[in-house]
Image (cartoon, rainbow, N blue to C red; front, side, top):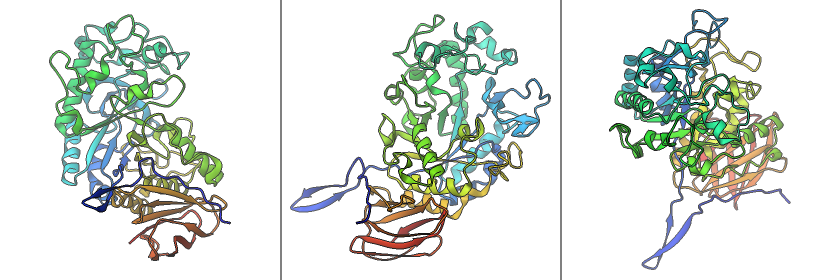
Length: 473
C-alpha cells in the first residue's frame, strides 16, 4: 500500500446553501511573492523592473536606504565589494536617517526606481533599521545628534551594554547587539526624526517596510529603559499614535509591513503580530534540513512552526542572514533552493520571499563576482521559479493538500482541483503514483512539457532529479 501523508489547509473549503443550491466558498490564501533584491542598487532594480514583473513578483525589497558608514578598521575607503574592500553590512550601520548611501544610490535614484516600479504595478519594500547606529557612534551625523537633543539622548541608558541573555526582554530590547549601540527608540525627538525619514520614503513611492531586528525594539508590555517613559515606538511607527503631530504619510492598511522577529524563547510573537507580519525563521530552517537530507520526512514540513497564523508570516528558504553571516545556507545549490522555493510558493499561506544570491556565486565562492550594487544571479527569473510564482497567483482561493511519495523525495502541493506542483529534491529520477485532488485527465507541466496522467484520483508520472513541475488545466 502506498505511503501517504497529507495535510488539509487550516481553513478548509466549505459549502453553504443558498436557495437550495450548494456554492463553493473560496479559502483564505496569500497570493503574492517578494523579490529580495539584496545589495542591488536603486538603478539596478529600476533597470531590471520589466524582468521582475514578468517573473511574477508583486513586491521588491531593497537593502537599507539610509546613510551609513563607508569604512571600518582594516578597510579604509569603503570600496564597492560585497566582502573585501567594502562590506555588504555597512548599510546596516546607520549614521543618519536620510535617504541615500554609497552602495545603493541617492534620493533621486530611489524615487526613479519607485516610479518605474509603479509602472509595472510593483510595490517597493524598504529594509529599515531604527534599532541601532554604526558600531563607531562617533560617525553619527551632527544633524541627528542635534535633532534628538544631544548625542547621549540618542541611546538607551543600557544602550552600550552588550546583550548577554537574549531571552531577557530588558536586555534584548535596550542593550547593545554585536557592538551596535542601541538607539532610544522611545525618545519622542528620535521618533519624529525617524518618522520624517519614513514619510520621505513613502512620498518617494515606497509602499512597505521590513523592520530589521524588530524583536530588539520593546513592545508596550516590555520593561522600560531608565531613559524612557513608555515603550510606544511601535504604535508611533505603525501610525496608531502621532509623535509631535507627525504620523504615517499613508494609511497603515495600504502598506505591507513585516518585522524580523527571529524565533526563540520568550519572544512575544503574538504581541508583535498586533503591529505587523512576522518572519517564519524556524520554517526556513525546516526547509533547509529537508534539502540537506534530500528527504521530506527529515523535519516537520507540514507544520509552520509558529505561534502566529500562517497567513501573517513572511516565509523563505533562505535569507540574507542565513546566506551571509555564518553561510548556513550557502552550501545548498541553486537547484536545491529552487526546489524548496517551488514547494513553499505553491503552498496556501505565507508571503514567500526569494533571496537573490550574488551573481557568479557557488557553494565554494559565496560572494561570486563580489560587486555591491550589481544584479544578483538569474535564479530569480529561472523558468521554474517564474512558473511557481504565477501558479501561486492562479491558485488564489484554493485550499491545499500535501502528498509525498514512499521514499519522501517527492512532494505534491495540490490546490483544490485546479492545479498542483511537484518537486523532486533528490539526485535520482523518481517514478511516482500519488493521490491527488486534480481532475482526471492528461497534464503537461508549464516548463518542461512533461506528461502526467490523473485517473481515479491518482497521479502518475516521472520526475527528473532536482526538477519541479507545475500542472494546471
